[in-house]
Image 1 (cartoon, helix red, strand yellow):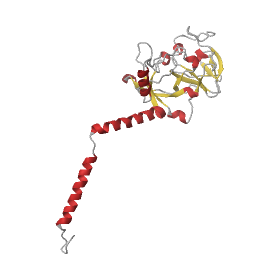
Image 2 (cartoon, helix red, strand yellow; image 1 turned 90 degrees about the vertical axis):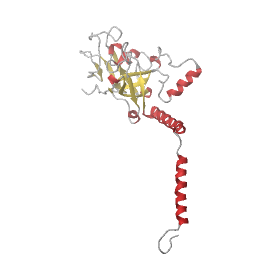
Image 3 (cartoon, helix red, strand yellow; image 1 turned 45 degrees about the vertical axis):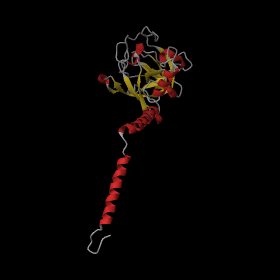
Image 4 (cartoon, one colour; image 1 turned 60 degrees about the vertical axis):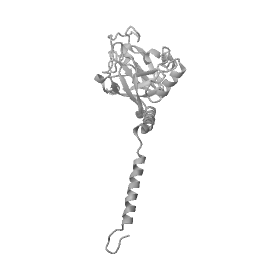
Length: 260
């Protein structure tokens, strides 16, 4: 208590100091050592990684030369690691010019071999880490460029060897042809380009590799039940960035070939 002169009694001052001291001791007790906090931080990071992989996007490496030179993957090249985002297709569907990663329909998977170990324990570990984006998913993931979408008719070729969509030639500066166009020569390993008109069903895509003579894309599967098209539901996301190797870090560009 304060007396009439305004001074504070010793007992009250002592009580106040005691409370401050107890507060400091409690604060010290609440601070955990880092080794105790580390497991909590790891769990939080794992949950964030799982959410990112499930809903936002994930990295992929698809060793194929079908997208040269947009993406490297041929023999003797360093396979590009790409980041594939999912957000764009929550509010829309793939558009012409998009480079997409998708799961191959049944006829595309005849040569696919699982990347999982035959050992059940190791396979379980691989599946677990795949959930966090640290191991590739066990599926035949492919990367191609969207050329036509549902309702459009695609065919090849015009007099200049260009692909046509709804009768109009495409402007495809990214396309790489190793052989000159020979009228009447059908698509195949000999370098031919021509294929008959295919009307893409709604909810499907016609996809082609940028490296046209080295790509087993929609053209190679026109005799299957989908006429070579890929269901939109099979699309895993849109390739937007090359994240490895360092010398090739940069965006994966989208260019609509139908706007010429």
